[in-house]
Length: 323
Image 1: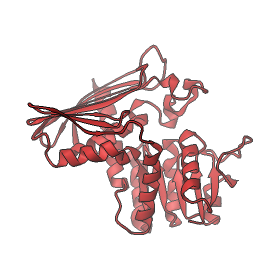
Image 2 (image 1 turned 90 degrees about the vertical axis):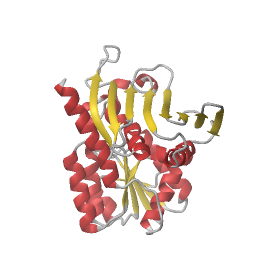
Image 3 (image 1 turned 90 degrees about the horizontal axis):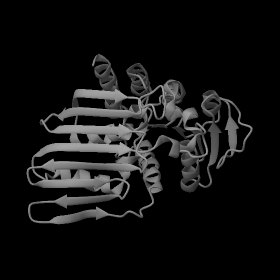
């Protein structure tokens, strides 16, 4: 790679610029704000600032990471796709199915490599969990419980939480979109989820115009019951799942990067590496995307797969509004 770019100037964009510099130290790296403004403040890990997607196209960049707020992903990504520039779009890929369909039409017409940034699929314990579930390690799956909670004001301590994307409805905020990793890996591990019931709540504590608590009940195609809880409220970060089957139970702690198998006769640690550098997920995701660009074997999350999460969020919102 000789020239790469990142759209967006938030925390995840900062990480992507840093990682691109690590992976391609000799490449020129261009940055662009989501709004196109030219920032007065210094931008880290950057060789130049541009004010438009057209400027990136004219600069003949070879790879772009779109890390702007999700409602802007389509308007940023589609011109790049039409120009044949490989584009990695941060999660959530968009906030509407109309935008998903517009991006998909561009991909089909121009055959440009496009992937979506669900980096948790590269967490070692996640990869090991998928192997175990696919192999039927716990027999017939009966129940899954997926839970994530973290206090929103602690996410970015140097910034008022009410001003961040997560709290802003117009920027794709709310627990459903911001914590969509859980909705993505649930379907990656378990297959399609058939929504049964959903409850969205906004606490008085945070006083947001978006949901800060989500509770979902769904069924897999095989009939296993899956419950999903997302929140912005837990003071100590919590990210754990359990999978209960006819032959045992697997508990997954994403923060500790750990898997524990419990059967009738023993408890076994299948995987544990709490000190693993989680930035390696993001590096692996970019490496994988480069393989996709080169038409090599890859495991990237492609648009049609990421679209299932947007569609599921739509269903949750519609169902919750009906109750």
